Structures are given as structure tokens and as C-alpha cells.
Image (tube, rainbow over all chains, first blue to last red; front, side, top):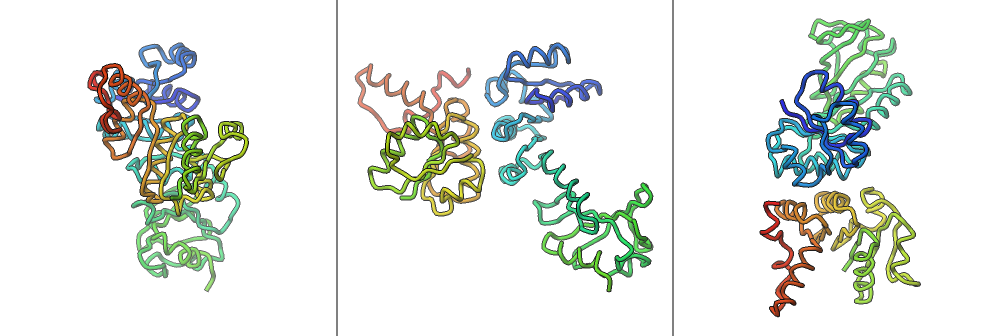
Length: 221
Length: 151
């Protein structure tokens, strides 16, 4: 498995260290020569190449054409976008992954076919929301271009689900409770599962039904 | 025509001035207020200060009713990303993208964006001028030179 990582800042370096430790074939592209030198000293020079990962001739010498995965982790979304788009369109790299610094930009990445994005800001924001709103449902992910949401919620004693089996509860159409974490142990939800207060449940819900789900999970009859 | 120009560098400022004096409704988006000095003492067009990759700024500039969008910053990737947001989300009819790297310009031309590469235009026109050849259309100059293709 050959991985190319574009951007050797903090994120790139920490990622590279772990990937090298796991024995992956890896190359980090860094455009600043002093930073590239620093990376060489830490990782070993065979893992580092000085060059602009957005340039086609650099991509060529870095072996984009035989890369299994290209990961763009610079601090600039526009650079990450161009790296991933060229990797896909020019070099036919099967898997591309991008760091997205501004969560608002995830939409254009998806739009041009870069489906795998990671936004630290987005993740921290979601976790924060989770801390701030006790009985809310918290989106933890999206499927099918955002039409289906994966949401997590903690059942309080007020929840109409508590004390009932999964097969007996009323949920909005198209919605399914798939997983449950109780006392730190995760299990799949079946029709027999009986809910208790304090359960963390993971639900798949069509985005248009998210509000109905909130009501179903939190409002006592 | 409602035209939005991203970037008040030398090219952006020149186009802004020229289109404004020809009666077009121009809005210029620029991050750095300092750059506006290139427009002269009185600004010929509407100005929005901000980041062209921020959709709130694009909306403020009137992207929803724009007929044309010209991405003219000195950042190739900024221009390419802004142009694709505008093309895909706001369906602006005419989009031009300034791309300084000839290879990148060529790659994105193949993806359907109108990318203008200044070095190709300058080289091609100088070549024809020097050889006494009549000037041709922009499309004959705005291509990746075969000599550079394997570079």
C-alpha cells in the first residue's frame, strides 16, 4: 500500500509518524524547504520530498500514478482541493482523503467528488454541541450525500422509549435505531432490546425527519 | 452585465476599471484593502472586502444574480476553488479563471473550466510578433505548449 501525504505541518507530521510506525510505504510532500528538512530529520529522508504537491510534475515524481491513497492535510482548503481533484482526475488515484479546515467547504469537496473529508473544526463543534445540549439528538455523521443522518442521543428517564422494547416504539417513517451503548458496552439493537434511562442510542434517520425523531425520543407521551 | 471580479491585483484591477467604463455593473471582491490603491483615487465599481471562498462574501457581492465571474487572485488554487463553487452551486454562465501554472491550467481546461494562462498568451504573442505572423485568436495561444507537455 503506497500512501502520499501532502502537507508536512503538525497534522501531516503526526500522521506520518504513525503510518511509518505501522510499516506503510509513505511519502510526505512539503513545499517549504526548511520544514521538509525538519521532517527528514524526524522521519528519515526516504519518507520526505521537498516540493509543491499541487504541481503536476511534483505529483509525477512523487509517484501519484501508483499511489493507492493520497491524503491532503495542508492548512489551506484550496490547496487540499486541488491536490485531491488532480489525484482523482489526472492520476486516477482510487482513494483520496482531505482535511477541510472550514466546515462550510465540505459541500464543494463533495460536489466535485471528494467524498472523504475530515474537518477538525466540525468534529470539535459536534462534540461541543453534545456537551451543551443534554437531551438533544446530535448528528455524528451523514450518509448518501447528506440525505440520511446518523444521530446519537442519550435517553433520559423522561424518554417514552425507556422501559419499552425496540419493536414497540413509534419512530418516524424510514427511521431505525441500530445501535446502543450501555455502561460503556456497545450492542446491536434488535426488536427484543429493552431501552433503559442512560442508554446511548445511535439512529439512522432521513434528514427531513430529524425533528420528528427528536420529539419521538425526548417528549413524554 | 453583472460581473464579479475576485482579486484586485494588476489584472483584476485593470479589468474592473475597463468593464466599469464600458457600462458594466462590476463588483470587486478583495481580501486586502491595501490592494484597492490599484483602482486609482476614485473607485469605478462596487467593492466587497472579504475572502472569495466564503459564500457569505460571494452572496454579498451578488453572486446569485451574476452573469460572469472572473477569478483573478494570484493564488491558482484559490481561483480554481472559487470558480468551482460559483460554477456548481450558483450556476454562473461565464467563468474565467486565471491560472499561472501552465500544467494546472491545462488539467483544469480538460475538466471544463476556462483557464487563462498568462505565460502562454505572452509567449505565443511574442513569438508571432517576432516572426511577423498575424495575431490569431485567444484559443490558439491559451494552450499548453507541446514542448512543455512532457516537462
